[in-house]
Image (cartoon, rainbow, N blue to C red; front, side, top):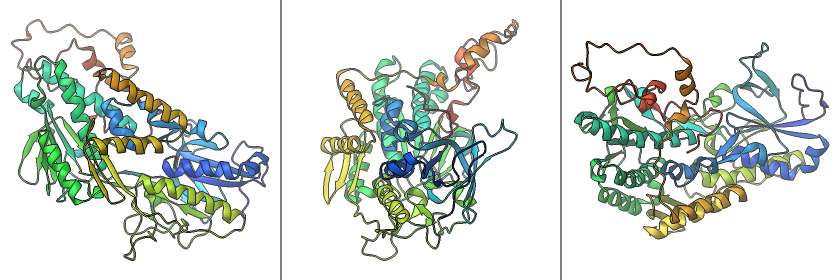
Length: 514
């Protein structure tokens, strides 16, 4: 066993063996949790140290992101604080930028790296667990970087909720029909879980919110789902996928199959079938790709950029390296066809984490390893309040029973009893009271109000140009979406409303509150 080196400024014993866990998502958190339980005595005595390097101090339970975006669950209850759960582990908030496994060294960029003269932190380790997860797979589509909104993090989910309600505010106040139509048109690209569930929940929320606007009706809102393949939700089967299309179209949602987004330049979504939709909202959920850190390692990768792994969750051909989850290509030993890999989803990730931790402990103690084997149980998906589809253990459900199963399953899977109780309480209260319809987009710029108050006063308006005679008087397509210089929100929000979700990266200091 290689002796772990000691970080700068530490006076710890050099005999300590260090397990480095890269990533604090499903696999990272659950692996560290199982390790701290099984190695409790060794960690207390100082013989073993578990270090978790993660960009965020929390783990996001992603299946609840659509409900958080719809306001059914508070953003605080969608995330699990790592320092509370992993109280015996060392948590380092930062990103691994390079990893040299031959030398057992990881270079970590922390929050303090820019202020330190010494540069990034160098961490050495004895055992490596790579679980950095995945990021959105964006294609080189013109305008996508400028106007696209992702749906991978809790910040993006809450930003999208605020953005949708803000577009309804713009549509309600504008005098320009073109701006109104663009504000009330919402385009979602990607017919997988993230896209369909986000669209279903937000359409439900917006339809409910419309009743509080005197000049917006639910039928005024235009929702478009764009999917490149010939069906949506392939995980629930072809029959349930067709039912989902019928259900969405019955709700006046325009589902475009075998269609691609070709451009969204100048806030106009251009589809491969020739359709053009002026819109201020393009939500991109068309797949994911492995985290970039994998390309900065000396470990073997497959053609898709994922780590090549064995059924024992070790990196193939490499000692003391383990991987699971989205970043790992793990063989599915239960599949009938050879070469099939486990799907990169939460169902496998949580189970892989336990096997990985068991095998790592067995390796440290000289015991044999066991392969990971789990037969896919099925899938459930929510389509909004009281609506869903499910295909579990060969049984197909739809409507309310599927929606209830979706909630029951994910309630049982969300980590910690604390989170289960809080989510259950919020669902109960949501059934007794009305939905919240407030947009708190200003939370994304907490200092803007003070900067506006402390800054110099704005110059007086040109008295020679009145609001009616100005050529731009009716052009509300400015940064705030209102065109009114007296609007404080417009003065403090210098970012385009279409960027509110996508511009929020996964490395902010914490989730926004709703």
